[in-house]
Image 1 (tube, helix red, strand yellow):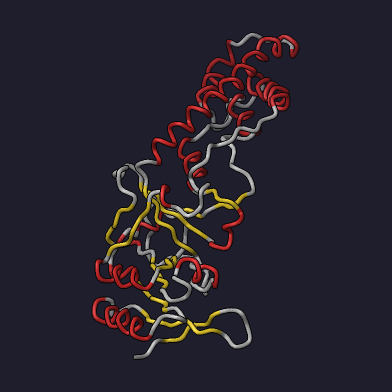
Image 2: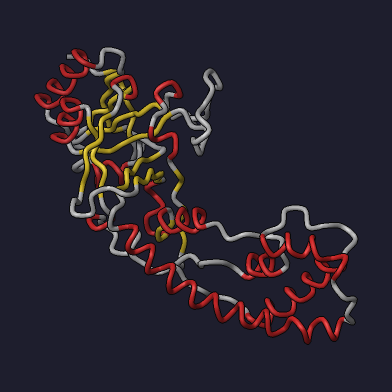
Length: 309
């Protein structure tokens, strides 16, 4: 399988978040035919995900207050008294840059005495902010739908779990700049042993010294794209659609026919089902390749060959 890296033939929309040329979608056999007939793909609410932790957890807060206090005061001292302005300041950093010439020259001891309580109060407020943010995320997710993709078409476990034990099919979906393909904004899933933190020590130190900012979009992206390492074999990418009908578990969204560039038929798919899908492809998607999976004789893996009636 190719890497899916962009060829650079077309200018990609600025909203796209990767340089891949294509992704893969595993489906059951009946679903594959319905997709081709309706020219729609189904997006799902996190409520129906098979992983009970997936987008159903609270962001954690694991910080070392003493480390933050010590290093933040050191960086704050540098921010106030360095000869160089803060290069990419947050709102506090802009205030520091603007007030440097008027800020009194304190000894290091006086400075720490003045600002230690500021650092402590910030750490206390971070705990409150995390609790509030988790509440807002839970509300936001009620109206979200997710479309899940993979960057592999030949994973035996994926065929077993998401393509009805190899009786289903896999769609190869192209990222077409001229169509602004929705999976152009897909994000890779990160697999971890622990729930991701709201912020780490380094980020909080940078915020206090005026050098860093906490992006709500980055926090939300981390939330929707972090899963347990148990799911690492999926090699998943995700597109998230917000502000949909929270009462519905799924939403069918149209795609462009030219975005389907190939369909791989499972090695256990009945011949009659293969012929139905192939006929539909040749009628409405004549540009798409039709391939079928075959078990290799000397390996526990699949190979793919052109399907012929």
